[in-house]
Length: 234
Image (tube, rainbow, N blue to C red; front, side):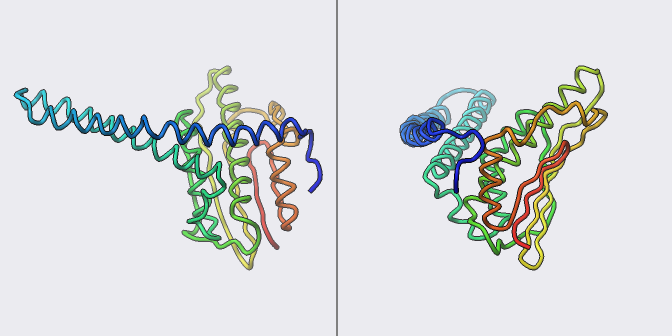
């Protein structure tokens, strides 16, 4: 595969370096996270054995439970990102597109939740990929979700400026027949005119790389003002 878009050698060096740096970070952050869990559990034990009133015990123990749950969630996220940087994050997915999509959502779901964007998934429980590397398909899905996320944010911002109510959501529909797979990411433009959209997919390096890879497998990724469609096979 040749050069893609404006991706230069310094971009590649930065990406490779980021992978190395993050791998070390993920390893280092795991230890303090584990220490926090152990400390919280010790405090739970001490509180439970204390002479505090039951109502006070309950109040403290509930918040320690919440703290432990959140730290465990942080540890899971770090583990997922570490496996992503190693290229092993989809080993348990096989060639199942729905499992790949689920793994991507595990990584990016908080970005949608934090922005108040509802994530909707519709389709069968399993779709096997006849062509394509699940790891690379997962990368293409990441680019599609990033594009969708940014577009919904832009649409919401336009509605805010116009003082018009707008509900943020991204719907993902999947289908697979006779070796052909199609995944569509769509959202509502509301009352925003299509010509207000300023985000051009052809300027996004990640989007261009995903398109080049999918083309090698007889697929493609296409973006419009209200959807992104990934196809493979056929």
